[in-house]
Image (cartoon, rainbow, N blue to C red; front, side):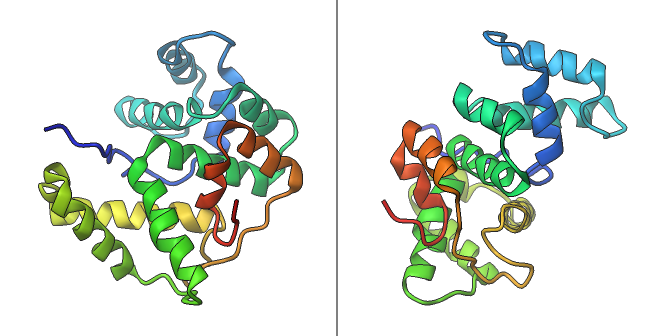
Length: 197
């Protein structure tokens, strides 16, 4: 039985600058592989190797393709840096069910029960619980699991979900950004600690 979890987020972090550049290059109605090809030609990332560039650009397009046209337009033309980080966090949570569930079931829940710290073993316990019901997760090696944990915590720090000491930060989103995200799916607001529907 195929996994319900895609776990290919083990590269980099939120890629804020690169994501903005990819969205800028994307033409309305264009297939995302065509955007990747043009981004490769234009050097949208600063990685030295073509294979690394391609992998990173695939990862970025996998995420930003989960944003609506209005969200991508806002990302480019109106959003400040924290709003861009928030939108890319939402995009990551949409692209990866595992990340979304961790944000809602662990981060949101810890903050709601006044446990503001987010220890690394919170990820380990969550992963183990999910692996009990998803055989493909159980097959992931310990080294890959540690890499996934490292990248997820890095993304959460970059998005302002946790601070550098891994303390959960209650989210503040502008009214315009909350409305924009909720227009697609109000439940997406739950990936931000402290925000409720």
